[in-house]
Length: 285
Image (cartoon, rainbow, N blue to C red; front, side, top):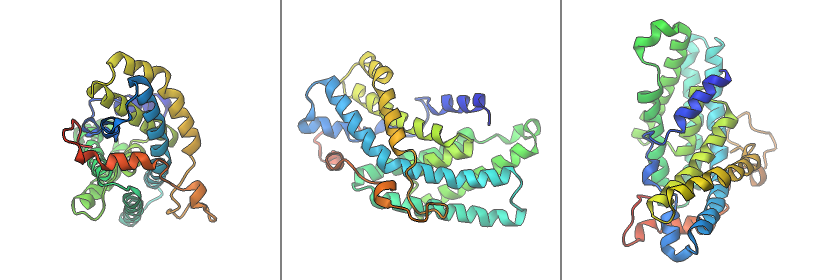
C-alpha cells in the first residue's frame, strides 16, 4: 500500500462520525471531575490527558501491536499467494485462536467493569464497521480485479468469524484487539495504527470535556493542536515496541515486567470503577 492509500485510510478512521460508540464514553473523565479532582479546566484536562494516555498506552498498545501482527501475517501470506486453498481455514483458525488469547488476557487485565463494558462495546462496533462500511462491495469486484476481491473476502471472512465468536461469548472483542485487527485488515502500517489509536483516545477525552461543559471547543482544539501531539509522540516512542508475550514470534526470553502490558494508574482505575455510582451522569462509561 502506498502513502496516498494509507493517508486516505487515516482520514477515514479519524472521522468523528464513525459509528464506534466512543461518543458515549468518557474514559473515566466524568467520574474524575465529579469526585472533586477539578482545579481549573485547562490544567485538569491536561493532567488527566497525561495520566490517562500514559496508562492506556502501556496497557493497550501491546495488544494493538500483537493483534495487528496476527492479521497482517495472514493478509501478507494471502496477498503473496502463500496459502493454498485447503490451508486457508487452518490459517484463519490459528489467527482466531491467537486473537482470542489476546482478548482473554486483555479482559483479565482490565480491572473494572465500566472499562470492560465500554471496551467491548466499541470493539464489536469496529468489527461491524469493517463489514458494513469498509469491506469492498460485491458490485465493484469486476472493476477491482480478482486478486483484490479474494483478499477482501479473506479479511471479511476473518472479521465476521471473530464477530460471531464475540456474539456467542467465546471471546470479548475488546477495543485494542479489534483496532489492531481492523487496521491490519485495511492494510494500515503498524506504527500509524498505534499512533492513530493513541490520538483518538486523546481526542475522545477532549470531546468528553466539551460535552461536560468544562472546556469550550476552541480551548479543546488549542490543546489538540499544541499539547496532544507531543504527548502522543512521547507515549508512542515509549510503548510502540511492547508486546504481550503470547504469540509464537515473541522474544524467547520475554520479560513481561519490562516489555509486557501493565496498569500504571491505579487512581484512574478506581475512579472509572465508580462511574456507575454517580447520582447523575452524561456518559455510559
